[in-house]
Length: 131
Ligand SMILES: [Zn+2]
Image (cartoon, rainbow, N blue to C red; front, side, top):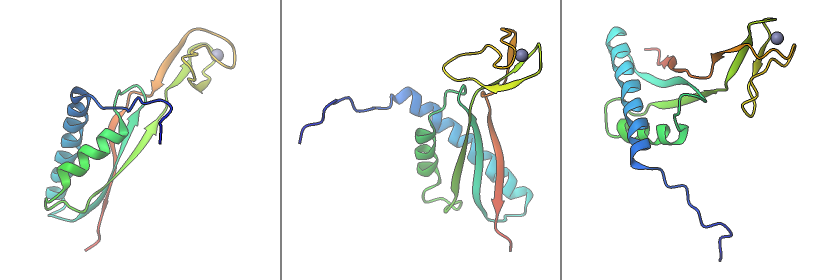
């Protein structure tokens, strides 16, 4: 069997280190929350990642799995919500999703728009098992 384009996506060690440290921060937050909840079992953690945050969701999931494995946190699921880049028009207030780097207002054509979302990297929610 011949593959038409033999260009496998090999993640660079630098970028996966980045995702690994983010996964680590997420777990730290989970541990803090567990303490606050007197050791309640956290079953799922949701994070919000903007497309501008420069985080590879696959690498993050992978790093997260590696860190959780064989710890008392296991099993812990990670849910990633990907947030696209949105701009708000300073002229008419229209909010739109930026596609292909087109940042002019879609309603009035003004070039004065500002980024209001897309660079998030935050904890969205935790699901805790009722005891
Ligand atoms: Zn506008």
